[in-house]
Length: 453
Ligand code: ARG
Image (cartoon, rainbow, N blue to C red; front, side, top):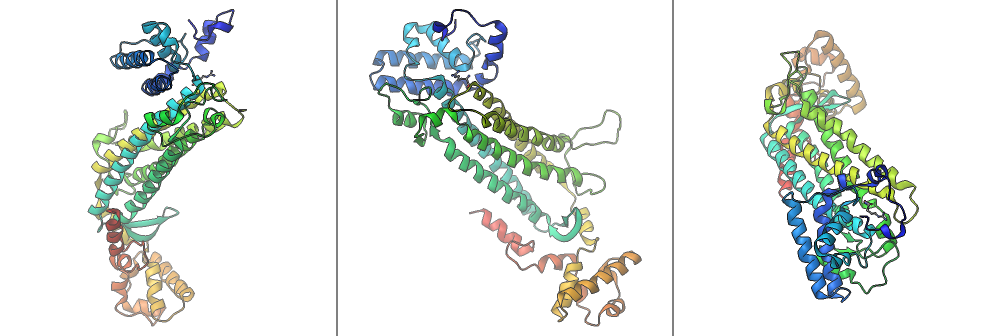
């Protein structure tokens, strides 16, 4: 039986019921819905809108319903449309008329808004835990690889040597900001919509501050129409998920490249790889590829909710029922991706010798060779040209710059001396970086030290 049947002379067709219903996906909100209803019943009792006895009976029964749902003893129905009306129907089945009083001074519009916010607060806390675990893993790996030398790239061309720790700490910083973004999103999520009624407030003497306190919200949304109509906090949340996925995806792209024979910098553990059904030699980085692919899904979630909201006149419109799917999907996808990613990087094998070998070839010390000539008094632009010629000469001979004889060096500039060999070794190139936040061994140790704070 419909909770709103009074005004209707005809039942909806079963296809309309099915189309309209959200219970299939919003049943995930059962805990938040019951938590919100318990707070609401408590407030109604405290304010004398319900008797103490009625309030207590409702609360006790809601607690029983919660336990029954968790024990798998409750069946939801499409006729009751969504999680809110399913629970209210069950309550009324169990305690009759008193159950029908729960919805006094409330609308499903403020009810669903509070449910989604409660749900997101829980998800943000869980995501926070996953980001922390990922950051800890990166820190652990970085500490192990302070001394591991590898090529740094621009345009995916070998550019300048760096350390693996430096490269990992670059990602660490991205995840620091992702975490900050979620913390910030939490501030705007942590505001109470409940008590706004359908859109205009209620005629009852309610206590929204009490509700905020009961439900653990930092404040009460000051305008009821805004409270029931907007989902900007959910858009912001998916945006935070999308940016974090983007960072994960870039990292995955690198792991996919690094685990190819062409790079051979890492080997992803068998437990996080798959084989091919036809090619026996294959070991594929599927987890990394899937994270990269799922990033596209989360971008879709963001676009989806932005688009759902863009043309809605105030206040509530049923379009908003569609908000939950992208929110759930973005949160689920991000958590699963982060968790598998963390396991994957903690178990992969780093091939230090291959990285170092790659760092030695590719003329990545050319900038340092130019800096050497600058230190001998030649203007940088001229040094750039001299070294450019040296590189061309070396490419033709198929050798590295440091493999030139002293005589050969001198033929390009008489400013070259024996100390050039030491100055352009891969480790010297790294060590010589002086700027704050550089790849030098000392700077990376400092960066690691700073993480403790
Ligand atoms: N299932 C609805 C949703 O998720 C609940 C709110 C319905 N409100 C209404 N006025 N029909 O948005």
